[in-house]
Image (cartoon, rainbow, N blue to C red; front, side):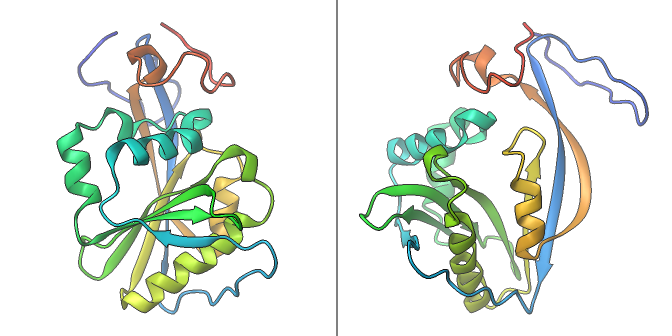
Length: 205
């Protein structure tokens, strides 16, 4: 694995060292007034606030949601830094709870920057995708952000994420405003995720 800066070309191809992955990141935002999406009747999840979440609990849910899509940032973050983030009074962590109280997903709202909120993480466990639960959870999240008084909500997604993620955010009312390239160590090579994760993304090491 090669460390150090990688110079990306503004056109054409940029070779990456072995052990690296790259994705195209799209940043999206919405501004007040936020869409007034009604909750879906029937099998509706509830956003259950988790105050000062334990690191083991958080990382287990994070992995169950994101392993197929190579979510890795919170897995490699040092414990002390992750604890400071999750326990900050301006960061709100919610479990998406199913009808029986089972934890089906994660919503994390970061209000640490004045006047705005980052939808830091939003996702469902694989077995709950495609059932309309994400739409209902987003409606509840937007209600929380609206009530907070902030003027702007933003999120980013990337080409390693669920293939429907970008369209879901746009349909929810977010507007794309920036695009960037992220290069990182492949978490399957570093051991943060098993080598069996995200089989649709080849490992080159």
